[in-house]
Image 1 (tube, rainbow, N blue to C red):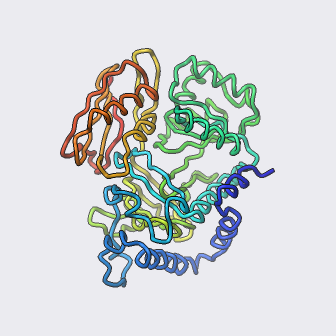
Image 2: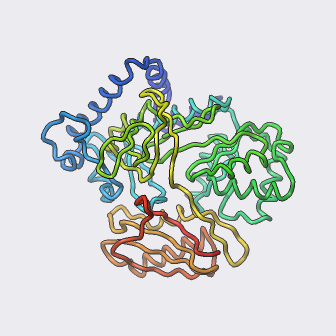
Image 3: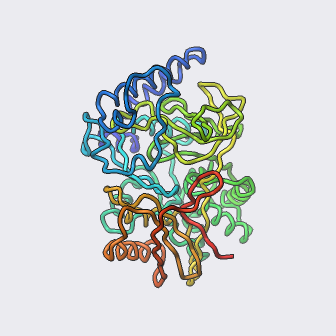
Length: 436
């Protein structure tokens, strides 16, 4: 039984049509690929000009004659109620609705039409097949967080069961917990790991300290896929040595799907099938291959919500070996998170705060930006920019979420600011530890 495909079909995501479309796109010769991309870009703009009031007003539409005249969308442009950004042809029941993690400090709610979402999953499945991983049959050890409220927890575990994923809860990465992780690998036929880079690095360090190679205890293991955070070369070497399998670098974002995936020759192959990737300078000019700049993405099939020339907040560089059909991401800067260390010895990845942002996000655009800073072993500061001061009730909800997802008896300081401090590249780091 193809459980993964069945689960998408039951949720009305047309995965068969998406896979067929992906195959047709991949069969387009290189010499015809520029025309394919041009038609898709023009088509998605025309659709949103006709059916999306938000985008029509954002574009200040007076006709279209040059792709470089299409305005750049920033995350702050999307921080308004979703109902005001949806295309008239879709609603919250007919589209897939998701939330960004806020890892860049700019959380928002987005929508994708069901075909676009299915096409994203077809792309993931295609890349995983490069390494003989079948989402319908291969068992995944999933190093992610999980909602701890009853409904969210049950829903996520049900999805895990159907999708052949077994969750390793990364809210606690103490040595005691990782001993339990190791025992699970010894007793299960996992085919691959998938999860946050920082969590897998910590597990790899634990294994190295114990002089353990994971594949010797779990022979079915084939690869490790890291995502959501930057992977440094020394960490990659550590993971490969401790796990005994290749480490594959995945670059994606919930609002656009798969952006790039590492092949067997260590090339980060950019998704050119349902996305169009550009590298721009600070004046929004398109940069040539080999030059570092802002990563800007167009979702070519998302009709429910415009993601057109969307500045994702990362800095990157395309290789001079790139072609239109096969762009290669040579460098990606950012997406690295610190580790939070708590008084009880618990070690928590910075992305744990993703689950706190779910409490903070409100679909009214109040909170524009936020960062979380660990100032002491038991103290965290939340700096935020918002239209209005956080109410006592909102602060209480955040404190409750921190207690649930991070730890008890922690002091949380709230500080509202007019602007937040950025790095030299202009990127906002959501979590920073000031502990030495």
